[in-house]
Amino acid sequence: MEFVDLSRAFGNPSPPRTIWQKTFEGSSNHLKNLCAARPESVAAKDLVTYALDLIHIDAFQPDLTTYLFPICLEMWRNVLFDKVDSTFNEHFHHALARRDFLGTQLTSDQRSAAVQFMREALLDCMDLEISHGGPPRSHANSACHWMIALASHGTFATDIESLWLSWWELPTPGRALAALRYASTLIYLDGENPLDSTLPWEYESLGFGERWRDENISFLARTLTIAYFEEKIEAALAKIASSITDADVLKMRSALRINRAIAEKRIMQLPEALATLSSPEPVQWDDLKPNR
Image (cartoon, rainbow, N blue to C red; front, side, top):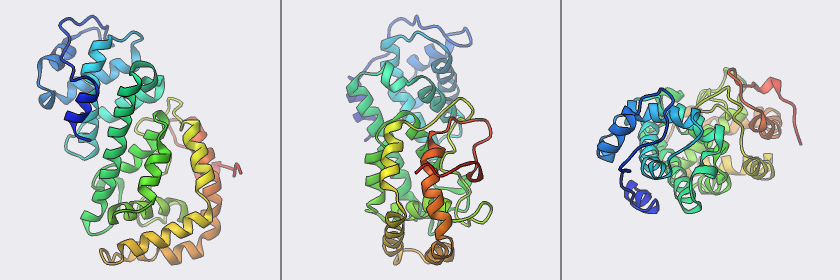
């Protein structure tokens, strides 16, 4: 979904003529700047300040929300794809997760469009994994930061089932490689993962009680089994066989065979981890007990 499609779903809004919404820092200059600029030219720092408003204020101006929210989503995507260097996504996620912003401040049609926009951006981001000719060695070196954004998505949207199935059906080599990268976090012991050190429940913001929505946890708990996991890893390896020869990826088959008991235990622990309220220091695997 492109920005023009997202804006159309929000009714092609124009900036409001007057601004009465209160702000966290007391000044409304950033709101005036955002409404005066063209959507593609807004300053990231003004959107960061607006994201802080979304976190801290209690009353929102509906026509201002309708105008600025698509612009926020476009900035979120640009940061996700490393087109913009900004802390916007951290604050934006905090706002979405903390106060159920999608459910309380958007109409049903707007909410559906916003979630679709974010879901498609995450999938597009996964598709880029293969463009590096090998798996990224760290979150910082990724084509875009989809691992943390994916974890964050489950805290404020309820479409993880749709996102997951579009991903784990492995329609592209990039998504297959992304699935292997995610799977590696369940296979390797801490400090031994050659593909990624990110925990599956590391969110854009931490320490404010973020957790996955119940619908998302239920889906993952009934879908992700050791048999499903093994089947999908084999399918993913087959999908990328002609595209990549990275030894760390191709060794995953033997790694899973050696660490199968670890993977099975972590698969059982994962729903508990995603249901745990976040704290400044993320919960670790050793802190968890299987919940099924």
